[in-house]
Length: 256
Image 1 (cartoon, rainbow, N blue to C red):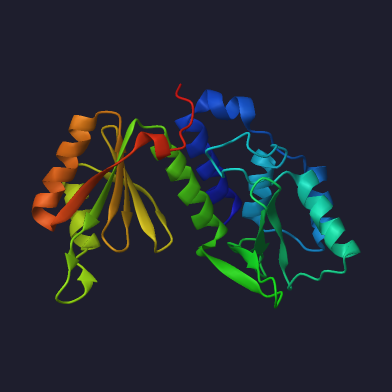
Image 2: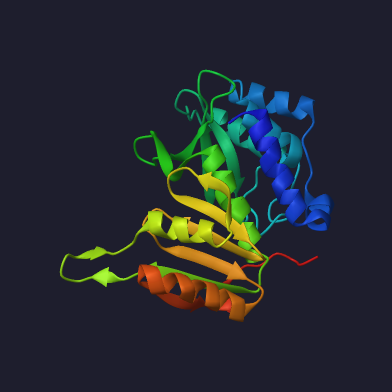
């Protein structure tokens, strides 16, 4: 994940909610980024550096519901590395703190590759073995894209969960992601980006769609009638079950 890729993702976020991010997003200076590299004892990837240039001085919770409750402020991460050194905790080779949060009580770590252009892996440290454990997102690029599109969907008023039917005889879900992708494209949806192999993100006419690898989908839009019509049109051809997600369970961003 290089500088250009990260910068384009940040530009995508800012275009979604210009006033929200302009008021809240705070970048770290080059001196602060160098200070974190010195504390970690390694050179960060180009993508991680670009992320910090945009958001590395932002306090925890300020950007919710993007990267909910995580603290990736340089000052916090430097303090974590210094505390680990005092506690004689040795992180695996190439690994450094990505976020630390007293709110969630959890940390995230990045394992950087040999080249600055490599997309770092994202994960946690096993509490017993001290080994680096990959998250499902696997890489920083996929992690940031997931949260960016989740932010996109949270801006919209209604969300549907569209899942494939369960085949009891063969004990499997009858999901067909290729058929769903084809239907979306024929109906004018354009793919915004892919999130590794986990999901693909589509948008068209005020509707945002997350298509998962198992053929299920999350669909969001302001117009519930249009959203239902879109889901029902797909269900006819692909045997999908449509469920409305309750608004009270959705963590939404302020609308502009």
